[in-house]
Length: 271
Image (cartoon, rainbow, N blue to C red; front, side, top):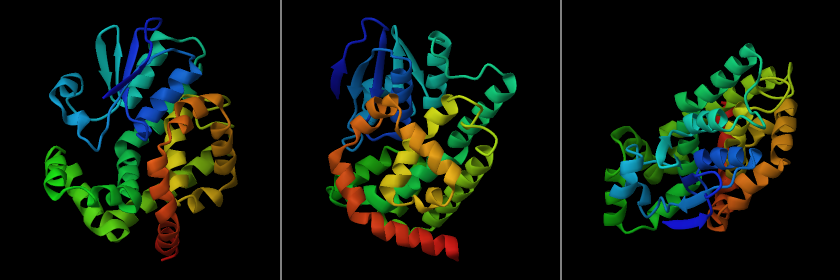
């Protein structure tokens, strides 16, 4: 684990990973809030999130975990709400109760399936190649450290890639998501209303991952989603919270397999 930054002003330490979409959303929110924080970077491939000291903070063995004045907060959407509660300046929740409810429905979708679909497409297209290079005993130990459902998905992704049955299911979930976004953006500039909110920030790193993986045809044919994505990516907080953290080793893998993934997505959606 690598430690960086200084939390003396805010009392915030974030346990995170550079390419984790959940970590990215929290970093972007901290940047929008202009909050200083100390970071502890976890190497997920090395099993840092499964080590006993970290599991004491986060029994789910995932990132991120935010520690504020010694108190751990887990689950990225919960962390974002916590940050908004503690530091309400530069508000990222709508004032209108109806818009605030819309914001939370968008965020709930991530936990209800979109995040799992992101893990599926990421593993099937790209991350499997990292795992295939590992020592078999090391890979076996890593898989055994996952919860059973995630272990099964991960093993299928590693062994079968984009031919794994869950890949097509995940692609179709994203196609529905972006269709819903296109409809929502017909009536407002941002997902929950007239100004940016936690809902938009929550999806920023996911939108970047879709581009990296070559699944962005689903976005490109929806002009309102394209405009929304471009405005998100232009924000300074996106750069400092997400794009500045892109790991070049991962980007190389994305580049090598993007065209194959794009062709398979087109085949799935035209079937």
